[in-house]
Image (cartoon, rainbow, N blue to C red):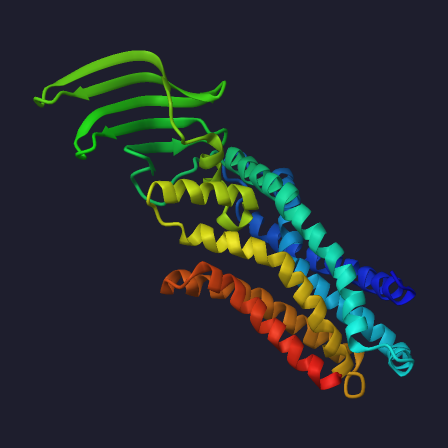
Length: 355
């Protein structure tokens, strides 16, 4: 690593951290205001609202990382431009690609940090936040219908009336069909919980349909239920798809595909999560030619304003285009990559103007 790499990396890191703190403060404040409307519901009080916001901070950091990297790089290089340091560097023979290389080395640190937060911290803390809120507000986790949560497990269909915050199942019904799609057994239970690696149903009633159409009813106080439906799969209903980890999304998409169910929303979240660290690097690249284009015609305030607009534009495009993709039936991969490709193309065009 050269002296130039270390110097530019230090400047970019310093102002990226400052930008992150400012953006995080803004997003946290808005999130807290949003929670004030829930105070008084059940046992949800001010302390729990603060705890909820605190647990969602890792997810916010992950989401605003590209914007913070863009603003930090723009501000840092603009400070060097104000002191004529960039002009001196260019006059001494430093090429544009050397600036890009130095910035991307620090961008690589940002990418690794974003991956660690997105995969190791944010999913856990977000689940913790949602469970804390659900328990305090005495809410049940339901599908947005009046018929509970339906899931398919090969030839078995499962209906769960309610999923409590601790993943206890209430009003469970399991329908098993034969290869000819005829109902063979129906199991109903008042409650189910996951213990020692398997589900245990309580107050169980099993109805067996014979080949001649006759039915036999069996009852038991408790019974084991062998199923590929795990607590990890059910926990995805506690948080939004884009807040799951890469591995949780991959596992759940495989489960949905095996049961021939729609996966578009989860595939979009999967590709967005895969592309977000890349978008952080793209934002760093975009900031460099942007500052050099503005060397003669712009000021620090102008650079900062346009940088904020670019960052917000990317954030909105990345979020908004996903809904367009889901509504129009386009490929989730296309929806996740198009905003990044668009901003990368903008960076390349601007780079050619200053070389």
